Amino acid sequence: MRTAYVPSRRSIRVLIADDSAFMRKVIREVLSRDPAIEVVGTASNGVEAVNKVLELDPDVVVLDIQMPKMNGLEALREIMRLKPKPVIIFSAFTDRDADLSVQALRLGAVDIIPKPGGPISLDISEVADQLLLKVKAAARSSLHALRMHSSLMLQRYKYLPLSVRGPAEDTPNVAIAIAASTGGPSAVASVISALPKDLPAAVLIVQHMPPFFTRRFAEHLNKTSELTVKEAENGEKLRIGTAYVAPGDYHMIVVRGADGTPQIKLHKGPKINNVRPSADPLFQSVAK
Image (cartoon, rainbow, N blue to C red; front, side):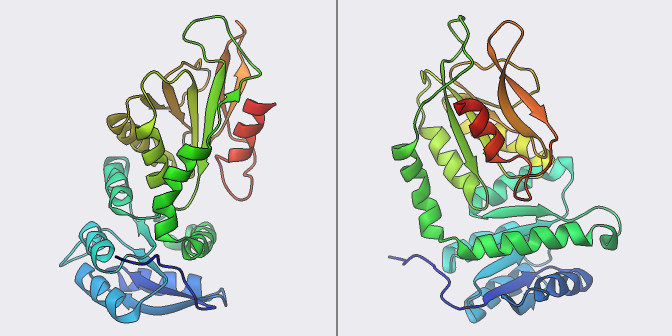
């Protein structure tokens, strides 16, 4: 039986896997700015990445998807089979590639960061902040704990009475609010798939993801759940037995509509704790 992986060293040891020598250099420079992070190795293809995970035993792996010999998804599968580690996918995505993000999460990746479009220098500050924050978050995570978190969430979630109510039979008087960040998608998927189809509540989900990933994530949840799961739309009324995923880069709150029924409002207010969507506005709007 595998024991849970918990980093025990003072520095966070990171392996970078990317087929671009330039990107390996940029990522190394970004991570090396933080004295708490040590880049212990790099790999230029998936086979080398798997071998270096076994050899170097890093705390976190930053992994590209598009690589020769063995692509990132295949490498991720092997890493999780042979020596499970927190893996952050850092790769170029388009709308058409968003399904790859769902596959990566299904295989065990704890987070995904899209490479910026255009010249890397234009977005290096934003990417640097994301990389540093998410590498640190990934290093603090225990893969065993992440897998167990879904069962704990099922034991601990509570129906929250909505301060905004409506008379319609399919309008919920209670809601379940769920928020997750690094490592959260797997736990959220486990929770949503375990909820019954006759759930007498609406479910509101905040998962920190890039904008075009949240729709794919909602579609994935919809396929594995007895509930109806969709990406939330501004102004849509809450319905029982439906789960709503906040779109990437939008805060989601619950407000009273013109007819008095609870509905969703999306807005691009300031980031909270460096994230948008944030759990705080959602929880405050549901519980107040």
